[in-house]
Amino acid sequence: MTSVSMDDGSLIDLPSQVKNVDWFTNHCIFTWPTQGIWPNKNHYDKGTEPQSVDVSFQHGIIAHGNFRGELKVQNFPCIDKNAEYMLCKGQVGGISRCRFNTNGQYIATVGENDCSLFIWMLRTS
Image (cartoon, rainbow, N blue to C red; front, side):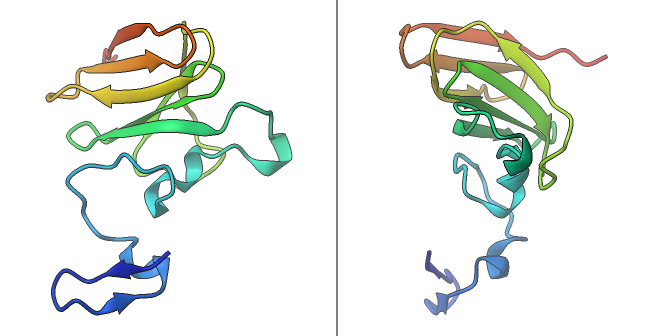
């Protein structure tokens, strides 16, 4: 992957050079701060790979849906593959999209197979 500096247009060859960049949004499953959402290769179970991701920067959490219809919510950034998560189940088949609302209090997920829309409310303890 090659990135380009917005300051001077120079090429950025190493992914580690952009690991500390503050982004406005994050919907990419292949970033430095999302590497921990991927299943641990020692405990890999087919279908648990992330399919869609969104970050609530104001709450410091990441939500990601997988091919099994599971929504996982974790602290962000998530660089540890053994990090704890909250698991939410309900959709049949994969979650094609997950997005936080503007204030980060709700997560909307769209089912790939069941064509359903779920709205999940976040509660703090």
